[in-house]
Length: 202
Image (cartoon, rainbow, N blue to C red; front, top):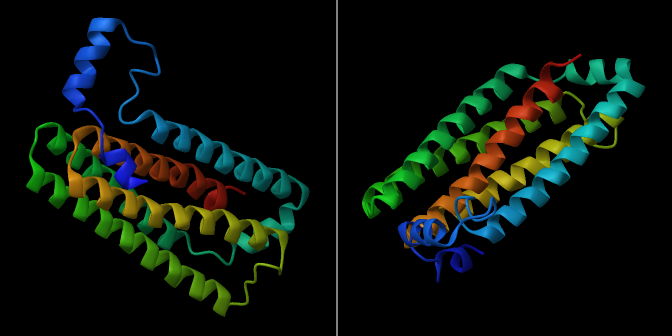
């Protein structure tokens, strides 16, 4: 996917000029590659469905969900939130550097974003280990079934996002880097919505 995004994509300035000259639709004005936005919207729909299901299950089983949340560690989740927000800022800086043709800076900012993403994964795996050690089980309750499904699905997207960022930064085409950054911001956004719903709301 990353090669497809990075190869054959016109420079961002060229795309901007053509949009201005020919008249642009709302789709044309989206940053990055159109197919990335198709992926982003499909993934947002999937996460939205899961979160709605989580909220419906909470309404049906409030006591079980409160008990499940009591076994979570909001401090670790807050640390992961800080990691992803900071990583999103690094990715935005990488995109800006790519637009300016600064290949080395693009790579440095992207590696920083990916390292923070890796820290997120490490913290989440540490959190999983603690929860499983306390007796949490994906089949043990509706709460933990949905919890592991939601957070595990998101964790896979963090890993995919790291791969995409590294792939597009290697080529350093502005539109490709911008596409990867858009995917990474989607991962950030989903977590910012998920964090209060899963860890804080009662």
